[in-house]
Length: 536
Ligand code: SF4
Ligand code: SF3
View 1: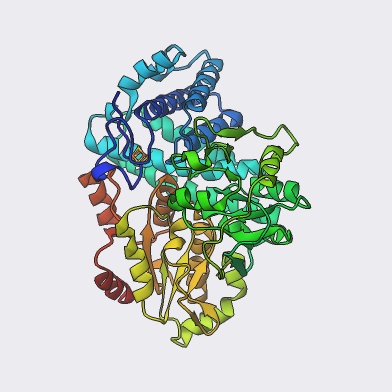
View 2: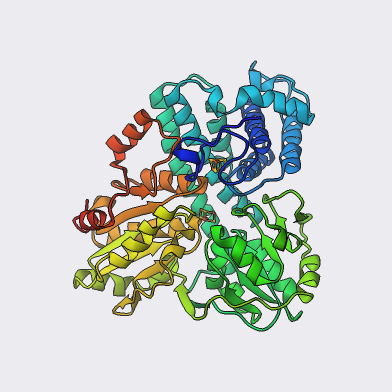
């Protein structure tokens, strides 16, 4: 069995994972099943061209979400999605067009493996067409994750679902390069809309994030650790653990839950434990209690904590207990996790102290006068957006080094798990404004865009690129692709991207991005800082 996947930053040799297993631990078989799932979704998209149904849009979003790096390793779940997808596709009969994706194929594992031989990434032979198609699909995956989170909170938008279908269907057609580039750019616009929708869903449900000091130490009660991005799961876990003697801690991308008023009111919500996703093996061991993975990023599970880790939503891992979705109007049932927590020792402390966050758009705009005055007085010379993802590569120390070496009159704007490279450094403040402003999860990059657009308005500039802002973005998985496309659609130019440029960009496609948007790879820390301070 072989595979081909090059969707994330850790792809082997920055070329592609192509043998028995990806660098993330995704087995070749699971990767092949994901190819077949995406192929099935293309069929639904084509069959939907004359029969749009929002339900199918949500199914596509959930399924694409399941194929994001480190979201779901459970091939039984992927096969269940393929089967459900085939049934949806066939329910749209009679088809108005003839297309390969609409033809019958069997629904056994063997049938899927046979199909996988002809429908993966490499089925598109032309390197540039493949690159543009995959760039679009990875953008769609990121959009899908955010759309799914918004849908959980009751916010859906047909325009987003229709675009998922349009984008998937487009990857089966012979389009011109201009048409394909146009769709990639449209993905950026839709990504902005999707992040805005999720922002509305989160803030209307849980209030606007506030400046918050988050405890990174531990208490003496047993705890439950919750990771991922799903705030509804966070809400229900806090409610169900209240008064049980069990504490709740966030891990990795759930850290920003600490900033929301609706969650801060719970006394047993103690703080954040640990760092970004890739440190989970050691940190889950020392946490001692149950862990709930609500979305990506889950990594191959170690025996030492396998009996106390749970998945829910689109996350999955073979042999790991999965908490079922809520039935209409109901809640998820976390009682098994709570009962297990009661039998576990309290977490082992790995650090003490506090970190500060909660600088989403509402909070920063409340401080706008102070921020604008600091820029006008020259106290703040530049903002550097260092949002995105963290990862294992040692070269990611670049982002720590940049944070440390940036002049003291600069402010770092961040969102996503990239922040763990520098959010515990104590970089100080400028007249009371912390030098690292964390807006929240990767989707809260939307907040950073809102802040930039507001500054553009206040300073009466015509072009967002005339602001004293530089972008030094860390990417890892496909939500970062959606965020990157969103920034491009807002007209941001000169973004530095690291630690490597995506393997899925062919030289010609990379050239399109360089020529039109001046995207560049990160370089030497000193040179990059000097260039950024000069607005290059
Ligand atoms: Fe490789 Fe990344 Fe794909 Fe995993 S998700 S198989 S590491 S390219
Ligand atoms: Fe992080 Fe997985 Fe991308 Fe949400 S949690 S930013 S990598």
